[in-house]
Length: 459
Image (cartoon, rainbow, N blue to C red; front, side, top):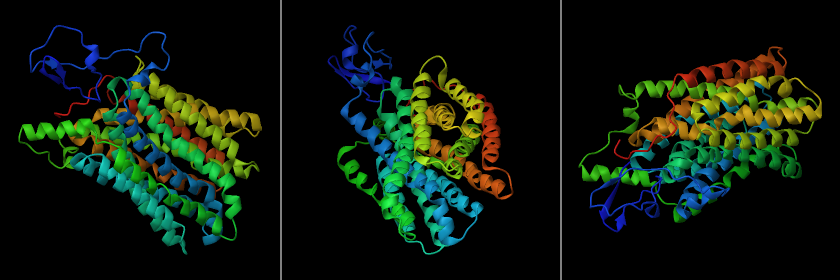
């Protein structure tokens, strides 16, 4: 990205880049002179000084994406606490219960592609709002299901909105924030999923017992899923469109050109290898993640323990991991190096996470697996968005993330099937974590490092 001087006293400042008018103290520059983005470190000895350079509009863009993702995660993960009740209501086995998670993850791909394509054409904000309304509606309607088939369809349609939030929300926030903080904000954004998971754990622990009469308990938990729709009211009035996307539209008008449909660009010669590699990589990441998380509450409950403290430990650890690895990715370790370290740690922690029954060790294992295993996602929002050009960024990142979710969607049913076939649940989870972790590391190394990449609105 290049910023231009319109006069000796006026600099066009791009909010998503590290260019601040006060930071330029050179000689007067003639109109039309380019200023390349530069990075200005926080003042020495000023902990937390980074946030002083984040404007109110940038925080609003962050919270629009973050809260959409938090509430999205709540609506999805609450199902993991309700599997036993749903099995009892509809008389289905573990494989069919796991299929409710599988179909949601499969249809996330539809939402990611559709919302990403619309976000590249019409802006990031409108598809984000539409996706939040969509997933809220079908989470709510699922609570009225009278048959397993109806619930299955509602969870499938819910997945479309779930995929759309990530595809539109992440570029909105990342394109708005300063470039030098992209790794940090990536970890902050992705940690929203763990926050949503913890909210669902608290809701199950404290709201569910009060409403659990007959089969009303699990239904009420799904009805609560309508609440995220209220977030859209705030987004409409408070959140601005991505400045990088707006600059892209300005560039198209100035050059009298028009973008082709962004989904088509992903399959051109220059981007097809990127699309394939990132999609396979995300498949490995999502298999790894769901092997760690989806059946964990069931495993803890089967050992006769309250799920709440262990799920809080797992998800608090994941939040810390997202923040840690996102921040580390801004150093010489890079995006790939940070994710690799986290994944290796996750595989190494399998014994303490799954094969101990001592309460203290189980809590420690849950927290550490969150930091290392599930926490490896902290680099993903920025890494995927840095792999694609502005004209196809939302659909590129959205498609690769959610094709990965589609590939990972079979994990929940696979583990359920292995368990139905006689394999202990902890062993089934361990095998899937270990094998997928190896694939994560290999596929990461097949892609380039992207730290320092600049979002260029002319591409």
